[in-house]
Amino acid sequence: MFNACKQMHYAGRKGQIVLYDVVFAVAVFLLVFGTFYAYYSHNFETFNSEIKMREMQALAEMSLDTMLNSKGIPDSWTGTDVNVIGIVSLPKLINEVKLAKLQSMDYLTAKQKLLFGKYDFFLEFKNPQQTTTIGLQPTDTNYLRVVLNSIVLKGGVNTNVEFTIYE
Image (cartoon, rainbow, N blue to C red; front, side):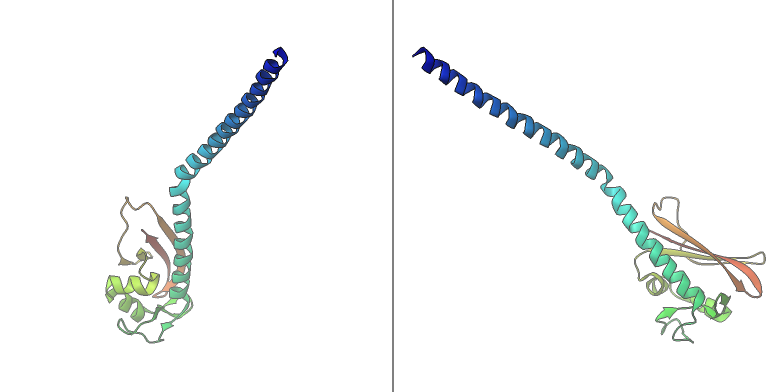
């Protein structure tokens, strides 16, 4: 009888060891899961911003490249029939007539044709003689923005082009 009690007591101890192992494993799992969850939830906004910035960068590069290296579609476009905005006669040689058409174009239409309507834009042509701006200038509160620069020939003068897109 004494041996039977001893065996039952020993069997109960085995169960406690298994229970401690399970509790320890669950605690480690919850600690690891909680760490990953906290990291992910803390950096989720950063990940989204990075993805959006890359999209904006690609869109800005494509739009500026098209604008400064093509005549547009159709070649002699007007504000109403333009499919793709191009403002040059030759690559990097600004066509003043097309630039004036772009300036006179409604902002929302230009935004749709340049950036597919997703983001706002500001385009600035700056040389020692004059500064020409198109679009809406970003405010300091705009967190996400991409700025691209290029040099073109406008009116026989080297002109710095700054193309900003922002959210």
